[in-house]
Figure: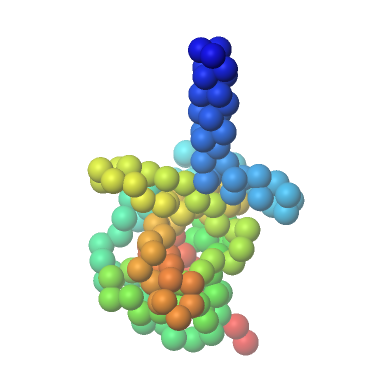
Length: 163
């Protein structure tokens, strides 16, 4: 009986260790997304200090500081580090939080993980291609769509209007 319980416990532990980021990596592999890997020095040379802090060190920009907050044009919000399309303008909404917010991602281009950096569990978002930190997703978004609020650092994004 003890052996069966031990084997079951080990199996349960193994299965539960496969977190959200691993699932996203599996999805990226299935979609043949080419990963971008650079050294820390290469990222520092490519990005502004704010972009580097947000994308590579999981920092957060000051609320209401992003010039992307007031953009109302149609277009695509892409990763500031690697140009991967992450969000569509039609999924952006005014959350009042001080950061650009979206109710959904472009499927397969955003990876998810869990962090406890501020003492409780949050779902962290990363670019699926370069691994850059984007922000977090919460369940207090528009109830008439997905109910999700992807709270994203503007410094992690660049906007390209559609013609």
